[in-house]
Image 1 (cartoon, rainbow, N blue to C red):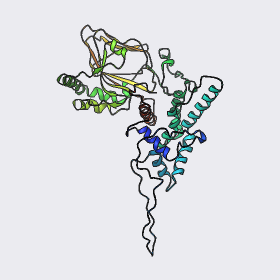
Image 2: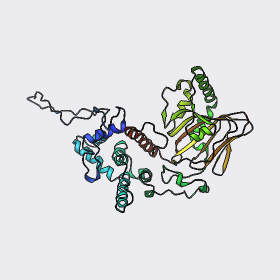
Image 3: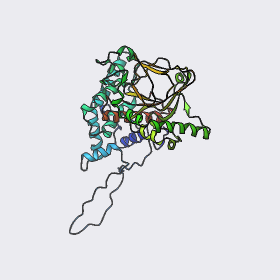
Length: 403
């Protein structure tokens, strides 16, 4: 494969491969020599020779070990922290042993056994995605201090991603509106996230309060973005799906899949940008959504139970003409007020005003109400590596549903 220098996923894999991490298939390890990334990450060379120095007749000076390069692969950094001077093989072996006995490693083992049994019975020849075979070691290296008990729900997510039957989706016991939440539509699933409900109390998320406090500045920056587009003869509004386009909904995207947009004029909206970057943005969008008069988005659901959506009214039609229904509940947008909801429930929108558009600041982010900070960090890292993995395989555009 031909890849760029900045592909973190393959850089990590190459460094691990170079030190024997995936050099053999012993103990179900993956042979990953076919993926080659750019070299020169600060790792010591096994072929380097020791230089002879002058000996002191009275005292022989001990060589001091050079500090590890900041570019050194995280697998080696972790091992260096755990031992004074372990050999390269010991470092890699230790990480592999720890990862194989972790709950993430066990999830991968379970999937391998499942596929083996399925294939043996003529079930269609399913195989483990190589990406997930790498995860136990990569996660152990990235999060060396994470206790196994703190990664149980992440392991459940991995099992479901490997095969839904390994971690069946279930409704939470405290959800009276489960009938509005079709489990078959959820493709990225973490078990045990509770409570689940169509709308959440905005006071539970600090972002909602900060957005409301800054409504005047955010509105001014939105208008400045419109003026900037007019001056530069550019139209940055786009539809992220065909359904949105046909339903009169377009988005001025500030962040996509958690990333900044290349060449976007962030200097025009510094406060809005800063506020959005304070939350763990999810793999969809953050930006200004515009709904044309007398249009609406039809009923649908989204497929990730780890994300929540916040929308604050920026420009709202008079007379409570713009609303959203999530599950059995309907709420109207109001300027400077936030709605916080779960898009795994069926939802639809409508702007009934004859000539006034509706504009909201839309933010998709990881569920900080139900997920721990560690779980969010781990999931952000998995999504980042998945995106790099897909790019390395030649996928030119990575959309929201990367898992």
